[in-house]
Length: 169
Image 1 (spheres, rainbow, N blue to C red):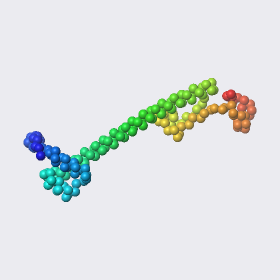
Image 2: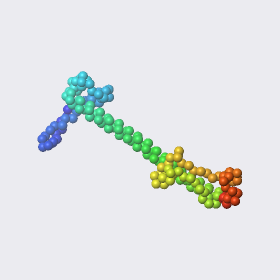
Image 3: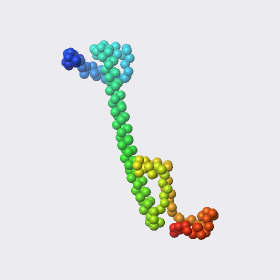
Image 4: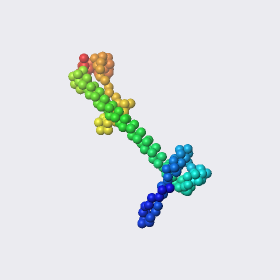
């Protein structure tokens, strides 16, 4: 073990570092089994010349470092997935805006004025929250209006009332 002097609370202490051989033996043992059984701890203590308590503390610290490394890797993976999904969401929202614009333009060309579209509450909220929930979105297309005949008008209306209804050729 190498000794290194340091001052802690005004008292000189020697901080002992493990040798390269000791660290390699500890790492090999850790790779075999993360948990340290008492028999194995005693065997390692005799083999590498460390106190059993030092070996136990090293294993505990190594498990903690391993867990932190594993969590960091998981975080990095999740962050990459989140970033990719966020970019995809932004692309889809842009496509939705473009498609809605195209629908409005088509409605104006086909009908001479802005056609009526029913929009769900989620679509209305999208302008502030940018949330799209496709299973609740409804846009009613008003194509083939010329196929509506007088017979489809409710019988409660008289012919004179039906004549005042707009006709879209």
